[in-house]
Amino acid sequence: MYRSALHNRYLVITFTIFFVFLIATLSAYKITLDVVQQESRNRFYQEVFELKNRLQTRFNLYILSINGLHGFVDAKKLVTRSEWSTYIKQSGIIEKYPGISSLIYIERVTKDSLNSFEKSNRNDTSLNPKDYPDFKVYPESNKEEYFAIKYIEPLEGKEQTLGYDFSSEEKRNKAMEQSRRTGMITFPGKITNIITQKPGFGIFLPFYDTKQIIKNSESERIDSLRGFIYAAFRADEMFKTIIGQNDPFPNLDFEIYENGQLSAETLLYDHDPKHTISDSHLQTKETLDIDGQTLTILICNKGGLSFTQSQQALPWIVLASGISISFIFLGLFLYRFKQHLINH
Image 1: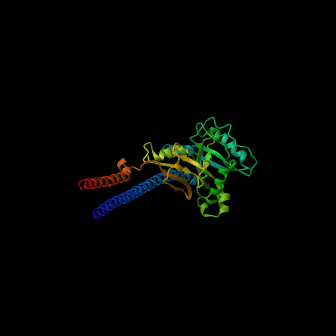
Image 2: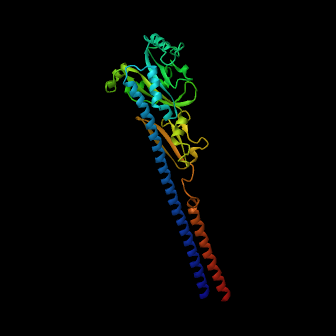
Image 3: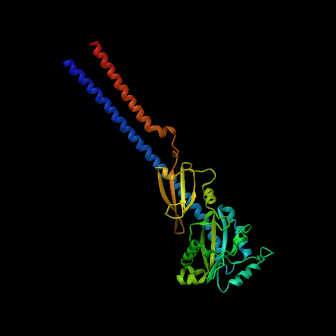
């Protein structure tokens, strides 16, 4: 009886140690898994920071280059077609910043000056000796003022846009009115290109009769507006250029929206259309600043974030090793217990 109690005690101790090993293994697995997941999150947010910084920095350069063009226009009482074309070509804005579809000079035209505006543009031979006999503000409407495209660069293939009234389209008109009142850059969001009918976006910069008008009252800004500089962007080309051919963020996917409402109507750019961001458990929402206005970036992890296979498999290695050792220990002790019973 004493020997039976000793055997039972031996088995209890053996299985107790076995379960302690299993608990320790599961704890080690959980700790290792938490460490790996935390490191994964740290690397993800580090790459998110680098991506956002890259986009914001390059976007600021685009805005800065367009501000230079705005400064040129603002400094002159009247910009001729030749001066507009020469400045843009010599500055190389479009070549330096791929994704800019066109740079447009929009002039405010009152109802009373509409006929003289159209006539002067038809007879403008400063760039084209054949002038522009078909120049006309369109679409036709009876309004107190129009905001017509006077110059556009590059011009080739876009001649039919000359005279287009930007205020005829609600989204553009709303952005222009805001820019006119505030004297600041405005971003109309996702729009359709006049010629290609493809989605893109643009920014408006107002210019006035007086350089100091921005410091004046809203009513003075409204009355003294001369027109706008408008930069039209091809979103896909622009953001692909910013990222580069050799994507430095292969483990990230991101989408850029014109505002905080994430929908197909507000989507400006999808970095990887084949990947669905909502399928990723690790994602974040960031913003880009455009002179006080914001774009929303939805970013997710779609890869291993530079982990090696052994780093990714570490928690499972710990779990498998711990369980294996626990069962080896149990097997050895049960074997010795069996041998002990046979010998006695």
